[in-house]
Amino acid sequence: MSLEQINLGWGNPYFLLQILNGSILPKFMNFEASELSYPPKDGLEELRNLTKQVIKETTGLDYDHIIITNGATSAINTILRYEKPKYVYTHEYGYPLYDKIIKGNKMVRVNDLTRPRQQDCIDLIDSPSNPTGKQVLFAHGNNSIWDAVYHSSIYTYNLNLFPKNHKYYVGSYSKLLGLAGCRVGFIAINDPFLRDELYFENWKDLAGVSALSQKFLINVLKEIDLPMFLKSGEKSLNYNREEFQKIEHLFGNQLVNEIGMFYCAKCDDRLFKFLDKCNIQYVKLDSETIRLSMGHENEITKSAISRINQMDKIK
Image 1 (cartoon, one colour):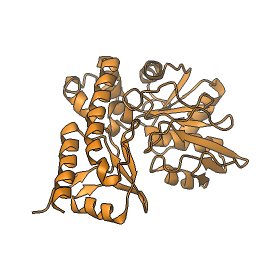
Image 2 (cartoon, helix red, strand yellow):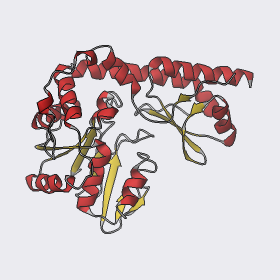
Image 3 (cartoon, rainbow, N blue to C red):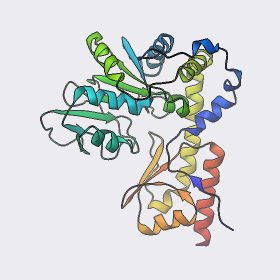
Image 4 (cartoon, rainbow, N blue to C red):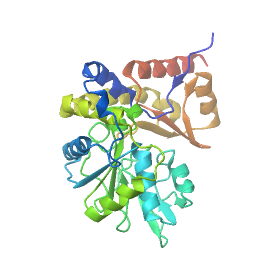
């Protein structure tokens, strides 16, 4: 009998949806259809103001201006189009779509933040990093992008470690609340001139953020007890982390990341084939590196780890 596939590849924080589902999601939608006209290009004012509060509450940082974007991907794309660097420096792996975003803008990606910088470059720093969990204290230059989608107490215990000299803060409600389907990201900045420039740059996107998604998210943010939600999310992810520790022995006792949402480990052909036999989906970062998401609901994670260990006993 074939095993049902369990997807530990794609990095959606389903465990956060599980928390929301049991509390506040059934209480919506309470707004009029007339409110669903085209929203402003930088997002609804109420959502922009709430986002300032969310950033302050999750990071302690203050920003003067928010631009709502079609996910964090669109935020990064908008910034790169505006800055027009020739070289973009990143961590070794980073968000899987970095390559497409950078190459789509006819730029060159350098997958090493320790390399000496070329002229006409920008740092794109995901900190904590996907999938290694690395955190960065300083960026090169004065135009760096901090991809901060995993910078909350759900994913890291060290909120004081981030690129202090960043120019752009990029966030996402996908990773903060688990609401990936809303497709709501944002850029946070302080320079009013830069805000105006990015406002017009954001017009060039073919698809903005729907008014429905923004109104829904406003309702969630007004209803949610964010500190309590963050604690619940941290607890749920730590449960999954402990489950993943039960398969460390299969990967030569490579430790599960303490920070972030992924188990990133070296992996040989034998292990890749074994996971295929278990019908566990994963992301193959290169010929010897695997990424497994710890972001599923607790029961699915427990089921996946149990299956892997059971199959290991009978192989």
